[in-house]
Length: 208
Ligand code: MD3
Ligand code: FE
Image (cartoon, rainbow, N blue to C red):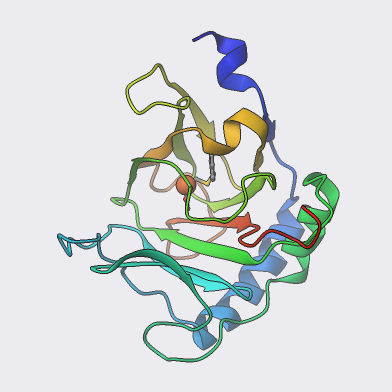
């Protein structure tokens, strides 16, 4: 596989969200996390805990537990519906997604400095026609992007606070993960760590 194959459908927009908008979003996320607390998902079957803690906003929240991966309308611990997707995330989707329907899931991942995310694909959605759009906040991280198979070539990219990535077309089903977080690299979050917000369309819109 060539570099262009790896890159097809992958857009990287460094510094897309400026420092003031980042700080405003962090303030909004504090209130959101009070309503929908971060929890630690577990791996299907093994029940091994993730190192990343998660919560969601939107109509469809992505969950992992012993039963498997799925989307659900309510927080698994509080039983309450997920909060609304922050307006700035809806705005980013409208600006970059080039897709006729809105996002249904805003997965919020919190990485303490030791947390990682192993190589995987996002494939629990009904449609892959819509892109995945992600925003990084806080500490920088080493992101790994591969291709359509688990054992093919990969490249690595440092993600910084405010960076946006768009994965569409062939890249939508690419393997990817977070190798490590660079603790102390940002002062956006007073207690450190990294937040990633990932927007996904889950259901096929009418007409697709
Ligand atoms: C590349 N999150 O939640 S976001 C995930 O930084 C996830 O927390 C990582 O992978 C994080 O599933 C990476 C960027 C991302 C999201 C989806 C992708 C990259 C992707 C789908 C295909 C290829
Ligand atoms: Fe992913």
